[in-house]
Amino acid sequence: MNYEDILKYNLMRLEDAFPNSKTSIGITKEQLAEYKQCSISTIDRAIMESDSSVIPDYIKGKGKNGRVFFPLLNIAMYLTDQTVKVVR
Image 1: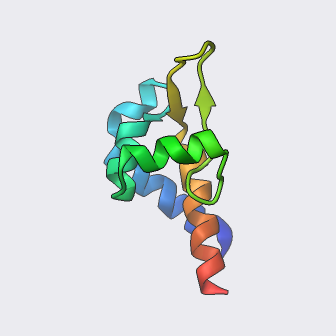
Image 2: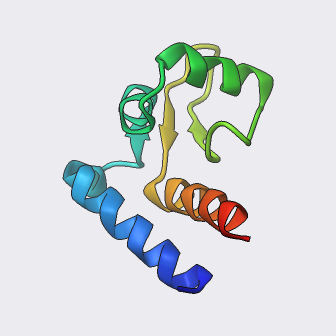
């Protein structure tokens, strides 16, 4: 499997796991934490530290308490990059 095949596979899995995400920007921190099987605190800490090795790129709303969304394509790219790193 090459990079594009793995990316398509990961995106398909995410769309199956989050069917309602097609009508929104992406999934929430809570949904990402559940999918990655980690705590919301881990996600929050990675956001505060801008640690892209723990979480995929995200979109943050304006203001101090703006909501954070993770587009499915960004998550699929993150998962694919993680998979390719392990395979090499």
